[in-house]
Image (tube, rainbow, N blue to C red):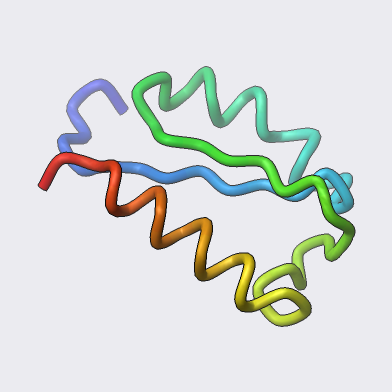
Length: 67
């Protein structure tokens, strides 16, 4: 992964126990990644259950990355 030159955004939801438990390992694997943790329930369906909040957050994260 040291040679990966792309940009990474890590998103996690506290309510998605399986994915959230892997979040620290992903952060360690990609230390330069931009990340966000959703605290609302929604699990891995967050994008479908709360699309406005998901889109707003992702848009904000993307606007704060270098192009």
